[in-house]
Image (tube, rainbow, N blue to C red; front, side):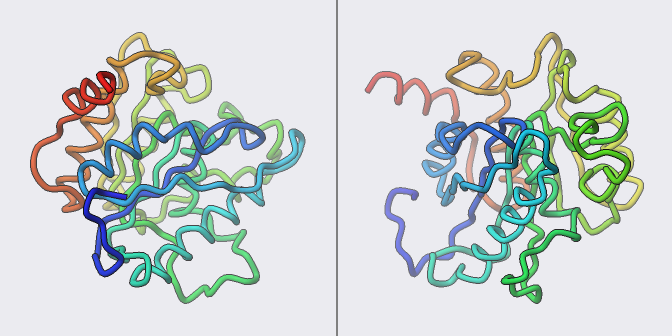
Length: 248
C-alpha cells in the first residue's frame, strides 16, 4: 500500500503475475517493482495462482488470473481502488497470463460474475511468452489447439494500452514475435509500445538476478507509460528510490 493509504481512497492498482513456466515461481518476483510503484501512489498486488502440471495446459492459471482481475474490480470500492485504473503485469509465463486477462475468453471460472470485465485498463509485460504457436513457448504442451491459449492469436481490438519489455537475446520470445504483436495491436487500433534491449536475455529485468541497470531502465519506462495513462503523477524516480532502499 502507498504511504497514507486509506480504504476510502480510489487508488490506481497493478496486479503482478509471476513467471516460472506455469509450473514454478512465486509472488516474490515482483516485490521490488511493487514496492516502488506503491511509493508512487499505487496499490500493488502480487497474486498467487494455481500452477499447472509440467505436461498440462495452463488452463487453471488463465482461469485464476482472469478471476483475480474480476475480484479486484468487483471489490474496488471496499479495497480503496479505482475500478477504471487497474493494470496487470507479469514476466515470462506471468506475462502470458497478464496478456491472457485481456485476450483469452474460453477459460473463465464457473463461479465468476461474467458481467464484470476481466480486461485490465493497462498491461505491463516483461518478456511475456504471449506467442504459443509452433515456434513459440509452450507449443509442445498446448498442441494443435494452441490458439485457444495464445494471446498473440486472439488480439481483437479490445485490448488495453500495452507496454512490452524484451531482450534481443531472449530464448523464449523471438523479437519477431514481439514485433508481430506490436503490429497486430496497432493494426486493430490498440495502443502498444515494444521496448527491445540489446544483448539482454530472458528475465533480464529481475533486480535480484540481473542487477540494477535493467531494473531501473525497465521500471522507469513502465512509470512513464503508467503516468501517460493517468495512473501516476509526477516524474519517475526509480534510481533515487532504489538508492534509498539500498542504504537502509
